Length: 377
Image (cartoon, rainbow, N blue to C red; front, side, top):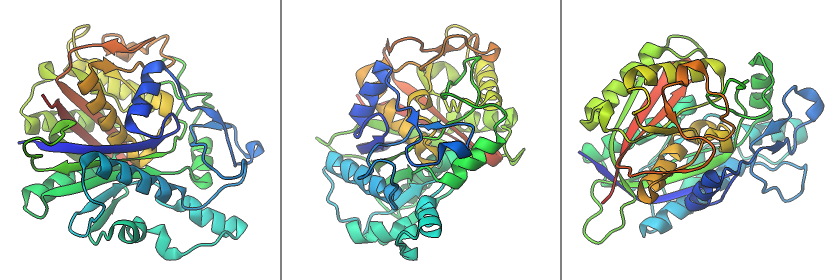
């Protein structure tokens, strides 16, 4: 059983369309820069992967996450040739912080705030007439959880088409919390390299139009074979290798594939030592050393885009399957011991014949998800 992805949209610090983002990734261009609006003196880390779109440099604005969400959905609908009337189309949004930054700006600086605007459903109803909207706050796995429910809605006959999206802007309270809890101060997000010192936040939004079957003559970017989810609740922050192993095996079972069938893995790759070592160890047991799938981690250039990160990796995987090209892991010079046998793409983009991609997304609290994507040929 498969579902067709007929439209895609995305906005990130390295591009404002899916193809633009992918081109930047393949060129090894990142969006890392000095904090744009937060007081540098308050934090040990002073960098992030922010989108540069504020009207006045150094002055923050509310509702940026909502603005990007609408932009990504607009792109996806236009790409799919779908109207902007979503009255009968469910819209499922994954996020970590929702519009937390808007509330901060109201509380600290007196910025105007409509409490109803804190919920994405308000803007979605105004823009698209959407009446069925769902918000998932499943940390880093949120958009793949949303994608899983989207497939369920289609299979249950609740909809023929769904829009799945994700968005997050960086909130200062979240940035400050992360700055306090990480043992080291990362200068950049460097997945699977021995220099990795922790996670840095990124910003952006992503959206896909997913349908039961596109029909003759319609564009299909890729086919979704399966989504698997679980919550092992092992630890508030530390990932559990057994929980991750179970979700990957379940996803393969649902997709009716074996590890040997996978050509590409879009790694979670958060740049935190514990997450990197756990993910690498699990995959090293799952795939043969030196001859498994190619692997990459886009967070090395986009930063951690939080709730939308899983779906952003999936959209990048769809383009990789189309182009036969895999972006490198930026800054990967000296891989950690657990990743020694993995085929991590380094230095420059790799060309390959790709049919099946696995997408990983693992969040705090053991919220795990994975997806399998198939090339549309």
